[in-house]
Image (cartoon, one colour):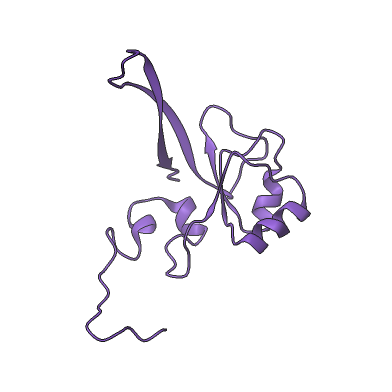
Length: 128
């Protein structure tokens, strides 16, 4: 561990070091999300099809995919330890342990000059 500068102290993170385990989010916990060495870094609406894609993701430091494209192969994510957060209404074939959460879409009214409804994405972890 790196030595902290004088006068600097660390504070416990909100939810504690076992947040996912303690709240029943077993898919995320099993994927290592409670580890002090894990920090979610990834992309939104990208594709993950081949081992070459996964190798590139690892080279970039990406470990999480949110809303993969429909042609993505979840077995590639699973084999390479890449966590996936999927759209609840468009689960990809072969969904398994790589999927740690789901995006649900709710419609909320926002005050805008156009007075339209706008979609707002909400994220929920999977409990098993």
